Picture 1 (cartoon, rainbow, N blue to C red):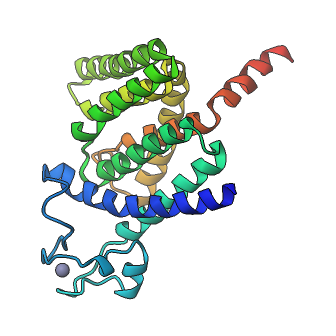
Picture 2: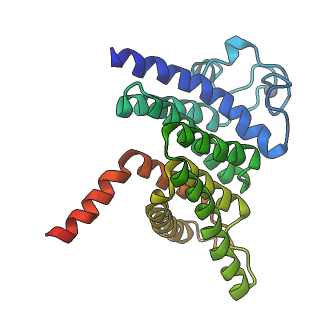
Length: 255
Ligand SMILES: [Zn+2]
């Protein structure tokens, strides 16, 4: 029975992944996400429904627009597959429950925000603000509103203070304002208790991977590192295994 839902919700996830590609393309450009309907980002020809089937259309069209024959970016099928896999994995992890709905909303927001951050260095308020509101609403319903409210405020101000001190010392901008709101969103969904581990994981993985990237790409330190994807990944780790990780850490004290 649960297998049926894992597959079905995964398929819905792929369809939502297709819409997410529209969000990734249009939100940073401040375009409407409902009008006009799906069109080719290069020649702007309308895309028929049969050319808009997640992943399949990409394969059938051999990664080329039917009208202008220009290349369709790998990001389109990749986001559709990742979204589908994430939705399936969350149903598998949580079963069918209100937590699953919350987790699907949060992970979808994090995926879309990460890709926008990688492509444009932006984390649009049009996603983070509704995200903060949804996190607060969910916890109001789930009976944990204080932990969520404190999480949202603490998330914002922890990063705001770090960035302000960093700016005073170096006269350089490190994190962007979008990062403050993304951490506020994670705090709103996951409660303030999640913040120490999220910040720790994001900073560690961000530093290690950035150093490796800078060495391999030889681009030097002027390359701006996007922190959004690391925060998003740390948020997902907490969402799935946070309490177990705390328990493991606290158990170390007993030995
Ligand atoms: Zn085209």
